[in-house]
Image (tube, rainbow, N blue to C red; front, side, top):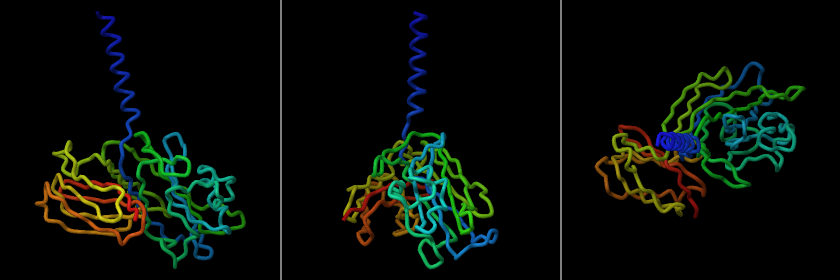
Length: 285
């Protein structure tokens, strides 16, 4: 009997550890930072080339979230190019470079959106890339978001800034404000698991049921908890819809119409006095 119990305990311990290791909590990471226009080295031509991407704890590439460069500056993102599958580290605009689900475009200028310098916002849905499509929710654990940026077109065409920030993806909400440096600062990382209730005292109950997903523009929100306001963000972190609510709407249905927006993924964010809960939805007209 003692031997049987010993093996049973060992099996249960293995099962618990295995379950924790391979948990895949769905959620949303919002990453914001400020990039002042550098003075040392000074900016050449007023432009800024940059990439933002996610890696796991072992340095394996997960997903690109932003890539802005042009053919004349595509040798300025060597680290990102080596991570995301580009043919070489000097061609960051090639077809092999993985920019699935990423914000992308030419070298940023003061006249473009997003602008070359100033506040920037990135949203990650906790998923990897499978082939050429948005993939599956990755395992919980330690991840790192990297920023590589170049603004000086010197004779060696080397990048001028490379910095990473570590965070934990899992069932617990995480807010981090790492120091950054002179070039990348005012950093904020906010991971919110989808399963987290806005009201922590009712954590086993959903805040809302949203349907249909995808939708042609009108989403139904069946409230299961108190909600003060609704904010909808696009994947750049820009607010595209906001509505203040009467909190006494539990067990009622609210419709929001965002059919005026472009097709794509959006984050519906619900807030009350206990916190925030985010839900990713798809607009497909």
